[in-house]
Image (cartoon, rainbow, N blue to C red; front, side):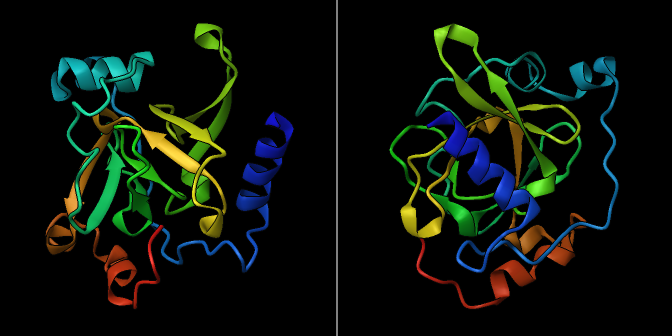
Length: 181
């Protein structure tokens, strides 16, 4: 089963098929991770513990698990765009769940054998812990569930994308939305 997940993740990054649509917008910016001391100043204790020390925030007691506003979710440490509200759905797990990242190359898959389990950890390209990916997502959207800690994310509402310097992501919301999972 784990081999199938690795294969799905590899295929989605290297050769996405037409059946599993990949968002068409990619950032042209380069994102650099601040130093540990800068991150300790910038982030709350929970954000630092989750994103930099691999912790997990409580389910149903986090900022974005039930957020329904249109916008993008960026890496709390660097601001790199990671997920779109158009790919977010209610999985019932208590953490924000997405069917795919905005750009598959913005996230890194890593085997995680902690806590007596075998899972696939999702990290940002600049090595912030985001969460895990599971094979129980909506089948019509590829079958993956990216279960992400709110503390690893910053949300930028659609109305603020231009003001925040993310105007290249407006087309994600201007095209007709297909039915969400």
